Length: 440
Image (cartoon, rainbow, N blue to C red; front, side, top):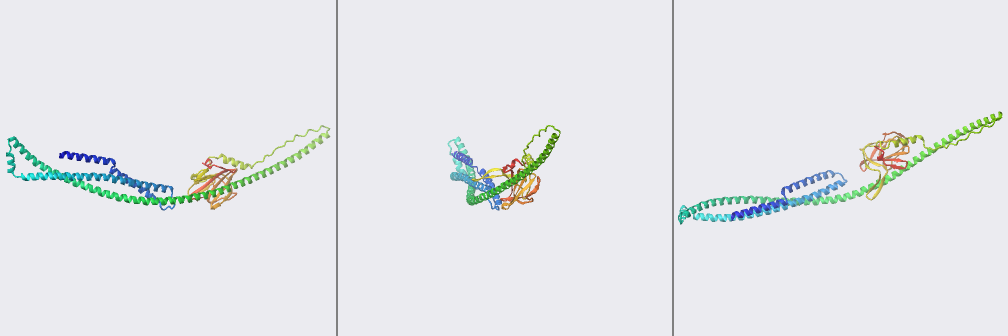
């Protein structure tokens, strides 16, 4: 009966422990919690590094959101640990109670055995018990019974000692479980407090970022307005230069036409004199007057000077192989762009070179304009019918009318929004070209 009870308790304990382990492995939960804490620490170090920067970035907001998510995961892991520990405490409490019950029963049975042994402890009583047998077989069986009874009593004493030892061990484990649960509850409370503090930081950060984003967008709109004004000035300068070039070309053509007309007049007068001499000669010789030569009228074309035509042709031939004005990546391309709901156009490309980088011309030409609206310079250079613009220079080293050659330094790049920035444009007449297709 006692053996069956022990087997039932053992099987129940093993089964219950297996189910509890399958539901949540404490070792795995601890590893998960440690991993989460390492990730939280990395994000916290990043946040500490970025704390000196007054301007929040999207990356910082994302890191803060991730940190909060990890903290929530950690709290959930702690909850899982506590649930697992509750199961362990329940199991160990049940085992302790069972062991106490078994130990009480064993001690009760052992006490009965001791009382029986005390009553029959002297040799005479034992001998009388054996001799009172009705036959030899019964006497032998009574003798064996007394021997087995003595052995069983010794075994029961050892079994009771083992149960007491096991009970003490289980009580120690249970006490450890309870202390661990108390520690987890404190940790959970601490993590909840930290989570609340980080959510407050998140709310403030989002509010600050929203304000900064508004200022940032306002700054972009202001820069776009200024850029639109500058682009208008550039177009006007190109139009003026085209008008001047056209006027010069027309004046050159007019002078050439007058020169040719004068030459033709001189040739006509000379031809008239020759014709008069021929007529006089024919009359003197009583010969027929020869017919007058047929007059040929030539149309004189009006064109721009040959040097400008050649320069335009040479510039066009180098399409795709022109050097960059500065070394650096393209941060914004040519054409249409959107910023929130605002739409704007970039007549060139934006480049991000190194700090204080020298700006170079991309082809031979003539400086047509140097201006500094809003405190930053731009340089307009003519290459025949093509023009290049170098905008956002903090200083320039060329002047209007100066001839420049390919790769000549014309200035130093300036900063915009805290970063080196050059806007570069190429125009054919008053039509903006995509510089990305011209430079290498």
